Image (cartoon, rainbow, N blue to C red):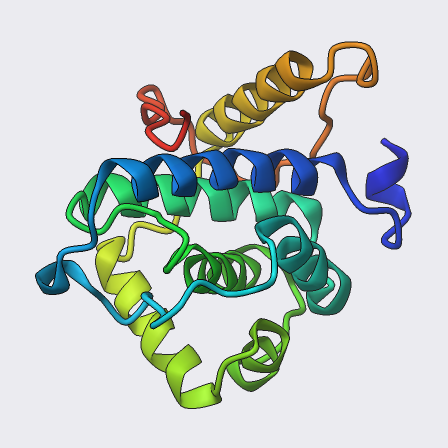
Length: 195
C-alpha cells in the first residue's frame, strides 16, 4: 500500500512485469526467427542495450503515471498479442511496445498525462515515431481500450501469483492497486503473455 501512497517508491509491479516480459521476449527469440514480412513499426534494427527492467523504471520515474497504468498496459500488451499473433513480443520490439502501451494506458486512465513528444523523449525515440507507434498500437487493439474491474483484478491476481512464485519469502503482502472502472466483465481474457 505504501508504494501507491509514495510516488517515489518503485512499485513491485514494475519488477515482475519486466520479468514476465523478459521471459516472453527470450522465449519468442529462441523459438522463432524474425520473418521480414512480419516486421512492424515496433521492431528495432538491433536489440536495445537497456534492459526491460531499467526501461520500465525509467518510464515510471519520468512519466509520473499511476502504478495501475502498468497493469492496464500489460492488459493492452496481452490483447495486442492475441489480436496480432504474427507479431510476437521479442527483444526487438518489446521496448517500443512498452512505451506505447504505457502512454496509451496513461491517456486512458490518468487525469493528467504528458504529450507524445514527452513520451518519445522518455522512450528514446523521436516524436514522429511515437505518433506512428500510437496509431499502429490503437489499430492493433481495434481501439479496445476499456478494462473492466473484473479484467483489471484478474490481471492483478495473475501478477500477484507470479510475484509469489518468484519470491515467496520477500512478498508477504498482496499486490494492491486501485481500480477506477465501472463496467463489469464476465469473460476475462486468457493471459497469453505468461511463459
